[in-house]
Each structure stands twice: as structure tokens, then as C-alpha cells.
Amino acid sequence: MKKKVLSLMLVAAMTATLFAGCGNKDEGTTNNTPDTQAPAAEDSQAGGDTAEDPIANLIAATEGTVALDLWCSETPAYQEVMAQIVENFKQTYSEVDFDITIGAQSEAECKDRVLEDVTAAADVYVFADDQVTELVNAGALQPVEATYTYNPSETNSAGAVDAASVDGKLYAYPLTASNGYFLFYDSTVFSEEDVQSWDALLAKANEAGVQVGMEMSGAWYLYGMFSGAGCTLSMNEDQSNSCDWNNETGVAVAEACAKIAADPAFINITDTDFSAKLAEGDCNIKAYVDGTWRSGDIQAAYGDGYAATKLPTFTVNGAQVQQGSYAGYKLVGVNAYSENVGWSMLLAEFISNEASQLAIFEATGEGPANTVAGSSEEVMASPAIAALVAQSPYADPQRVGGKYWDPAATLGKNLAEGTVTDYQAALDEAVAGITAPAE
Image 1: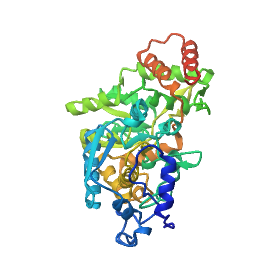
Image 2: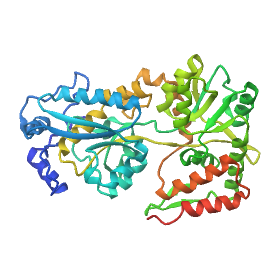
Image 3: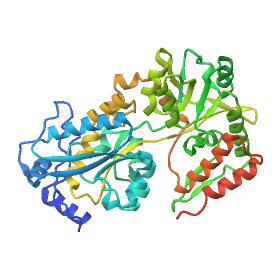
Image 4: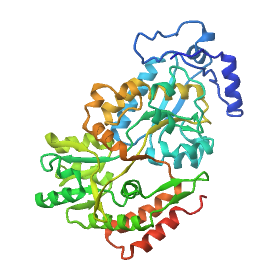
């Protein structure tokens, strides 16, 4: 839905207020004009009265070369598709001379690098949604209070918009809605019944002489074991955590994790190491807990057997419980200290519009946050996306304070390696670290 376009004077005043002292030249950002990548039925206002055309205003206010740094995932697929999207952006706004550098930066660690020195960080960067609160608190994100080509709050799923917001204000552009995990498997080895539970999965793996993998030592994945059994973990207002994993149920979960890890067919392995094994061409891991970003590699390795489904159930106190997971999103942020805030915002919009999200899906397998792109026939036909949808009722938003990660990873490592002798003591130690005061 189109909104009334704000005047250049109003937006310049707004930007000057937000970025006094930042030396920005392109404060012409205003509200909606039609998306340059949208269907032809939405006529562009380009070439009209510049007082009502924010893009024309931005171009008119631009002198010389516009230099922008963009950080996105280091994976080859992401680097390649982002290079093409950037080239499309340059062609769309060919009146301007751009110098756009694409850097390789893991979304999972983007916040840490940005906060090392916000003023030196990239103008535009892709990050995981659990980092948004800390980035906002550090003043590292330009609020999306005005837009050029479409309204991200209206074109993306409600969950993605909520993930990109703090206290109801939008601070980033939703990009993907598939930053969760589920089970990939080779259907020439495992049946649909085999993959319903860890007990059946491991039994069949032992029978077939193959392995089943998961990063049990990874705090992100370990969370799903405890949450599935009803244990809780949440972030407080001061970014410390509340956690009850050291209760009676938590002890039973820890014992179950150790039992799974001790099975001869189980391998505790990171996503990166699993990918390397796939690349070797002789990988014996025929089922693995991972996310959509690995779908291309796994499909190539499993061939006609390529399949995916929700996570298995596992045994806790003699009963089957559904393994949980985190549900997450990838977002595009604009650095509040960018010297080209207007162009940075327009680039962020372009990277995250419907056409670009579909291009990213085609290149990486990650599901779009855009509702039209996400409901496309191509996306809905993806086994990985279907598995993610099946897991979604058991997935939680990733909202956890920074003190969670190291203690949980240590706990997971000890469970995976079978070194825990006193489960209650191990959980008490982990919870003490997880719930320690935020720094």
C-alpha cells in the first residue's frame, strides 16, 4: 500500500536530527514510492516532480562517487548472489557512480565485529535477528522510519517484522525467514518411519553401517533438546538470562543427550566440518541436523535420496518428547554512522526486496521473509522449507543474552564427549554461568 510521500525538507530535518555530526550528504530518504523490482502494474514515479520523488531527490543531492561497504555471509553462494544483486542495483541507478565493496562476514558474528568500532563497520550488513537488541542499544542501526521503494512492514511476514523491531520500532529489513534447523536425511537409507525418533534413527544407522550427525556441542542446537522437554530459557530486560535447566527434567534431558551421543552411529560434528566431509565425496553421514543454508550441498551428496523432515523425538524419563529448535531470521541493517545513509537505506531495501529474496533462495536455499516470495511455487516445493515449516510449531524465537553461549557450549561438549559423571552438578554449573549478570 502506497503512503503519502514526505517532503525532502521534512526528511532532511529528520536525518539531520538523527545523525548530527555524521557528515551525511544524502538525507533525502522519504516514504514509499513503488519498488523498482515490483510488478510492472506498480508504476514508478521516477522522472516526476522531484519534490514528490525521494529517489530523484537522492540522485540530485549526490555528488561524486558513492562508496559503500556491504557485509554478508562468507559462503561462496552468498558472495556470488550478493555480487549479482549489487550489480542489479548499480544498473537500476546507473545515473550514479558507485563503489560498493562486498565483505565476507558471518551473520552469527556480525554484531561482535560491528561493535568493535561502529564508525568503521560496513554501511550495510546482514546479521542474525537475535543481535538486533544489542545493536540498537549500541546505536549501530539506523531506524527504518522512512523508505524509498516499499514498506518492509507490509511486504514481509509478521514474525520477520517483529524480529527486526525493538519496542515496536523497525530497525532492520527482513531478508530470510529460515534461520532454524531440522533433519536432513538420505531416503535410500532411512524410511519416513526411521526418522521420526532418535531411537529408530540410530537403530537403523547401526544396522546400515552409516552415521547420524548433529552438533551436540553447539549451544544453538543443544537448546532444542531442553526446550523440547519443557525446560525454559529466556532473556531478561537487562539482557541477563533466566534458566531452569538444572531441574529434575533437565537432568533427564542431559542424560538423554549423553545416551544419544554415546551411540556408535552418532557423530558430534559442526556444520563446517560436515560440509567439508560432503565436499570430500565419501561422507558416511546419512542424516544430519542442519539448516536451509546447507541444502544445496546435502542435495548434491544424497542425490535422489535427498529428503528433509522435522527433528526427531527423543526419550526422556521413558516418554517420547519432540526435539525443539530455534526459529530465526536474517536481517539487513544500515549503519547509523554511514556517510551515505540514504544510499545505504536504498541498497538495503534493494537487497531485501521480493526479487532479491527469491534470488537468494535460488542460490542458497534459504526461505524468503517476503510473503509473496515465500508463497511462490518454487519455494513451497523445497524439501528443506517444508521441513522447516513442519518444525516451526516446536521452534522458539532466538532471544537470549550473551552469557548463554559459552556455558551451554561447554555443557554440550561434555555431554557429547561423555565426560559428565554428575549430571546435576554439571547442570548447576552451566545454569550458574548462563544466568550470570550481564556485563
